[in-house]
Amino acid sequence: MNQPVNNLETDSWVADIDNNGSKSIEGKIKSLADLAPAVSSLKDQGKRIVHCHGVFDLVHPGHIRHLGAAKQKGDVLIVTVTPDAYVNKGPGRPVFNQRLRVETLAALACVDFAAVNEWPTAVETIHLLRPDVYVKGNDYTQREGDLTGKIYDEEKAILSVGGSIHFTEDITFSSTRLLNSYFDVLPPEADVYLRNFRERYSADDVIQQLKSLNKLKVLVIGDAIVDEYHLCRPYGMASKSSAVAAQFLSSEIFAGGALAVANHLAGFCKHVHLVTCLGEQDSRQEFISQQMKPNVSSKFFFRPDSPTVIKRRYVQSFLVTKLFEVSFFNDQMLPPAVDETFCHYISNVIGDYDLVVVADFGHGLIGRKAIDTLCKGARYMAVNTQLNSINLGYNTITKYPRADYVCIDEEETRMASRERYGPLEHSIEQLTDKLKCRLMTVTRGHRGSVTFQPEQGYVTVPVLSREVVDPIGAGDAYLAVTAPCAYMGFPTDLIAFIGNTVGALAVRTIGNKEPVQPVPLFRFITTLLK
Image (cartoon, rainbow, N blue to C red; front, top):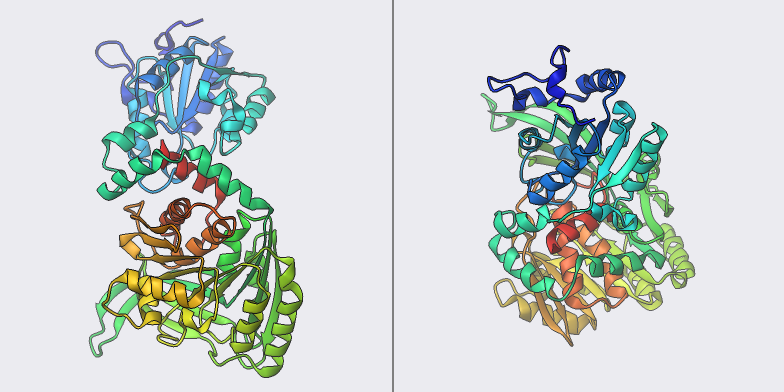
């Protein structure tokens, strides 16, 4: 045991040897396809294979001692790193790309081979390489502390190939804490904010609060929207007109509007019921049903005079910049017969739910009778009224006589209060008083958010990410996750923090391609609060 792998240099796959007789860094870096036969050959020669896996975003003394201890468990140490696409620690991570991370590990004397993994976890790699020992750090000895729960799968995998799992016992450091402290990962104002927030809350405090939302029963009422993204490569102005000429590349279709709100909620609340209206002329019902998460039950009403709202966006693929949009809709109020059955259904079921979330996009679904039904029947009602190019000026929050929690953006706030240039606080206080609102959040794009609770005052939170792929849908995600937090009576500063973490994750996704999921959110929160 522990004989140098350099003694095996007669085999063609063995790392290149430099002039000093040591393996070169490039020679240590292998693909998994090359490593599999290499490991098999080494095992045939009686060598004991040790495997470590992780992100290794910033290699520090704790990592070095961990890998050194791992090497003592066998003859050959293989280290695999999580690919950039699967790091999943929130915006700005990894700081170092997968090539730099694997090169850093390959430079360590104790590491014999390093590779970029091809999957989110090491499970498939363990089955491929069949190591004798799989080594994790001592922070994984408490398996329940692993937010992803993948340590159980990895342990099962190593046992299934006849190996064993080992946990090193040594000094530990936090790459995340070092990166937060010494690297410019977040905007400066976010660093100051988080230093203060960490004094009041730990990551575990926040995560446990979010897990408590699971028991809630939530009713979602709102407009169903199908978002189409047609990715193009624009070439410039056409030679004989002012039209932009572009090459079509690909298209993607997402469930948006209230559909997206329900899917966001379903990750955190076990029982979610969606009530919405589709158009008979082009309902997209099959697509919509396939897009909804399993714990979302849906009740669809149908209006005969309309298609389901479809927003078709033509987007420059490189920067996800919208070039042009075509919408298919009928924004007239529901036909009386449909409105009657819609409101009757709501009045019959609304008492069964703890929380009602209203996602009102102003496309004709929620009229005066529906608003009256919601306001009278909801135990707790969270509302967003969205302004867009179709309803600008007509769909304001003041159409509701009451709301327990309001979540709208700054333009929507100023439009509703008719205060275009005055202090934002004046508009917020005017609206909370008018609606008898217990809590109000105003999202402000790159300036973060302001949350107001009449008894507790204002909480201002900066943006928690430098990365923005597409802002569309971020407000829906913010509403969806903070609404149950507001219902549960979380402190205002905690609700505001949770909302901005959700927003930071949402803007990294094109449209509503993916709902915000608990585990990535928990990992991002852990990253921020270390």
